Length: 259
Length: 191
Image (cartoon, rainbow over all chains, first blue to last red; front, top):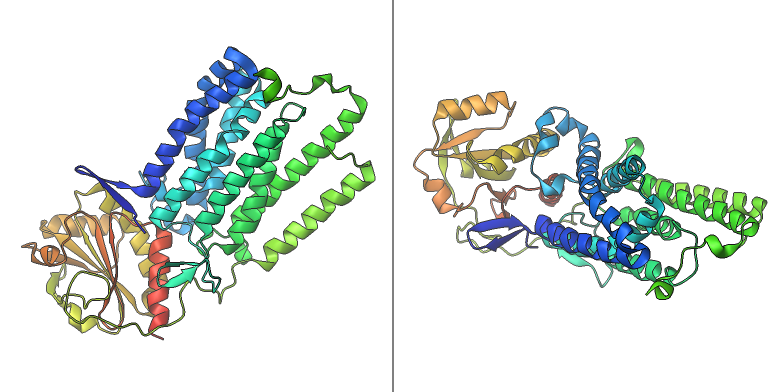
């Protein structure tokens, strides 16, 4: 475990550093994907959305963490503003980012579904890199296991949940890019990403030892994951019905067709 | 896309909802579940050093109320020695998290020694009072303990098990999960 990285005179949090390293190229990558899928107009929209979505994600991540640690945050509300990368929660970041993106796109008349597809093609890569940061900092650690691929941490051999998260993100990345080759309705990639994200939260969170929990020991991220999964199922069903009624020319062109 | 009839769609949605909910309930965090490792008897290097698996270097410091507290007197308890200062922003941010762990685990034999680095006792007392911190703050007036523990960056945290053996060293502020994971493990080992 390497929670801090020494760079010259600075000691930086490895988790925060990897998060930063993943977000910056992620933003650039997303603009390129948007350019490939919707030309200069969509790329410009993606650029404009970046900061509002990031702000929404940061606020959501801290609110989620704080609300599920209310005994601590309620006593000292200044913690909501503290510069601590470890006190963020991914479900809150996704929810906050989605909400901010939706409001921003609506206000500016942007094509939110096309942007959602571009995000879906980018975000898993960002998550995979950020998961390595979790591994280095020792956060999001797993429950003890006797499986041969367990990693020693905090005096026990544990499920490498951070690696599971990274592998799930890479799997999602491959799946979404493969789907992008097919003629699918606009927004399908975004919905597919949310479904995969839901499945990841539902399954991997079950092995975490430091989950944020609801009353009764229910893991909050799993409930959130099931919600995402059900949203993706509903989306697919609705569009599957619509596809039977509407001719296929409304489908989004594939990446290959556009390039 | 797979084309399902309306009824099949409804069944599929219901199946995902029911199976997902059952999975969530089955994998919930149970009260008896611990994040800790099974108790082990690890070999210990007995030479005192601020390194994991060495004896924690002994010291005696005065607390804010004038009591002398010696590390060796606290054998049998799991300790977090946190070297800090009020002028250090990450230390201030970390304190409520440490307080929460102190309140949660104190009854089970966990205590915190907040070793303040060369500050005015009045300023330290005011900070502890304003932040509602109830664990003992010790005054390292000449910085000797901080030097012995090689606390070159603040905050520096040292977890000591019930036998007085240093078990983990962290530089920089710790997330709540790391404090809880380490303390639970060390508490369980001594049972």
